Structures are given as structure tokens and as C-alpha cells.
Length: 435
View 1 (tube, rainbow, N blue to C red):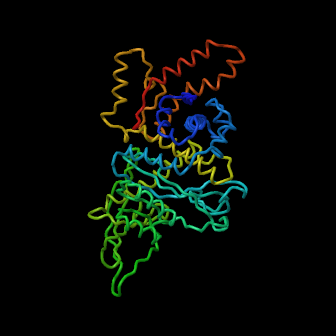
View 2: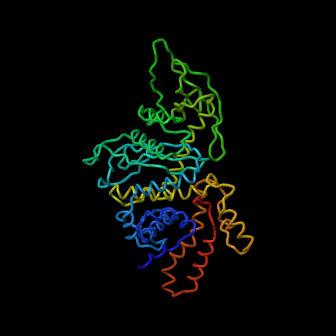
């Protein structure tokens, strides 16, 4: 009886992360293609197409396409494993959950669920595809949780029923609670804040929330009740990069104050500019006048962060028409997104054994290659800074595969060996991973 061969190694931290998914793939080739895709999505390739990824990881484009479209693995099982990895890294800590939808322009009408519809991040009706997402936020670091496709009524298949975006959001919240995620706060814009079904689901799960509402939001009041607006209070809106901006907040009370409270936030109390005046609803208790403005503001930069992750990791770069295939592609992107997020300080601990091992190795082997001493190492602490450093670590591996066709033409064995040696040195570097 023959023993299945071990999967080819790539870059140590990618291999380490991907090993948590190994049992989901029935054969070693499928697992290798999964690792190749994770490497390719992390790389500096601008358009993450199968041919472009194949060139930088030494794979066949058709093999990568087959892995996404036809290989025997389950996107639902993969998602379950990814969420298990996420929960393990959180180690029982509670997180903020942001609900949002995102869309991408797509040409033609042959791709599942693509049609002319409102695309929120574009701000207008266009031909495209839309999905609803739940993101996690921990100590300033975002990470993917769940997503689901929005299916316009005119694109439904025979056996399908229409679900609104708030209905999809309710299902995402239900799933996260069933999976045992500890949620300390839910953030969402007015599309979800105006949905009674969505708000009811948050109350059902006893979750705190801060959600946007429309300026003409109505509240049922008894005869004789009046709407009161308290005095404006100044507060400093604190942004993720450490900067601040002066804003003003006041509570709006419909009759009598209840568990659900309403606030108006603006940058100018005199003119109330439409583009920088917000109305929000929350069930947070206590004196929250200044706190709630910053909490709702987190929604903006989380949305911005996801847009960056989408563009960097190739969320919309697929050339696929079946949603079965698109969902698999999006799971690959979410996995790469999580891989980057797990390298942030929010997921590190003082007792992280990998840190101690690196420090010990540097004492025992002074010549050990330490990528963080590279002159291009990014000292910032943001998600993009982390991605830049990961790209620096995989750079020797990518360069090897890009240069290999030239080395074969020149029959230059020595340069190839030198490049392989560099890859081996880089692979001695340990990154921060909760495995």
C-alpha cells in the first residue's frame, strides 16, 4: 500500500496557517492548490486572475480554476473551519460586529445574480452583484466572519425565494450567535436600522447596537407626548490613525426616554450639513452621549478597511459566472483576509511561543535571517502595514518562480540554488499565528 506524499512546501507562515484546513481536501493536489491561491491572493499581483496568480506561485492556471470550480471540497465546510480558526484566535474575547453590504460592477447578464441594481459603495444603480457581510472588529483590527449573496427578484431561480438585505443580515446574526461568538456591539447603517425585523433580532439575542436611522425616522407616541431635543454637546471624534475631529451630539427624546435612545450627530450645529450629519439609534445604557458618537464612527473606517482588503486581495477579480464558483472564490479571499488579520497585535499574546523561539534562535544563531530587519520592513500597525510585511516575506518565493523560466533558458543552476537558499532562510522566520 502506497502512502500519500506530503504537500510541497511554500512559505512557512502560509503553510502553517493552511495546515488547519488540510482535512477538508481529499487529495494532496487540492491542498497544494489551496496554498497556491492563498499565496497568490497575498502577493502584489494587481489583478488576481488565475493566470496572474499561477505565474507567481509556479502553478498551472487551469489547475487553479479547476480547484475553485470543480474540486471536491465544500465551501460551507471550509467556512465552518475558518470560523473555528477565528474563534480559537479570539480565545473567548468579545467583538464588535459590523453589518454592511457591498457591490461590484459586472458586465453582461450571464453571471448569477448580476443585474441592474443599487450598489451602495458605488452610490447608484448599476449593473453588478451585491453581497451582505458580517465583519468582526477587535482592538482596531477587522476580520471577516460571514457573507451571503443578495438575489434580486428578477434573477431568482425556480426553487429560490427572495430575501431582503436586512433579512440576510438577520440570518448572519443568528448564525454567529448559534456558533457561540461573543458579541459586545452590533453596528449597521440606516438600511438595517430602519428594519424592524433586524432590530427585533438584535433584541432577541440581547445584543447591544448602534445603528443609523433616517432623519425622518418615526416613533409611535401616545397622545400628548412631544419630541424634545437636548442641548448640543461637543466631543472629539477619535480616528483609527490617532487624529481627532470636533463634532457635536444631542439626544432626541420621543415623549419619554426608553431603552431605545436616539441621537443626532453633526460637524456644524448651525447649518447641519447633510453629508456630515447623522441620526442614530441605540440601546446602550448609561451616560453615552460622547461615547456613542465614536462607536458609530467605527463603522466608517471598518467599511473603508474592507474596501482596501477587497482591492488588495482580489474580491472582484474572478472571471466566473456560477455563484457556486464565486462563493468558493470569496471564501478563498476571506481566508487570506483572516491570515493577514491574525498577524496583528490584537491577536498576539505576551506569551506567544513564536516570539520566544525567534529571540532564542537569534542568540544561538547570530547569522539567522530576520526579515523585520529588512530596510523595507513596514513599522506601521495597520492591516495594510501587516500585508506589506507579509508580501516582503513571500517575495523571495515569488521571485524564484518568476525568474525560473529565464534560469532554465540560461541553464543557470547556481542562481537557482541561491534563490532556493534565500527562500529557506526566510522560512526560518516565524510569524505570529494562533494555531
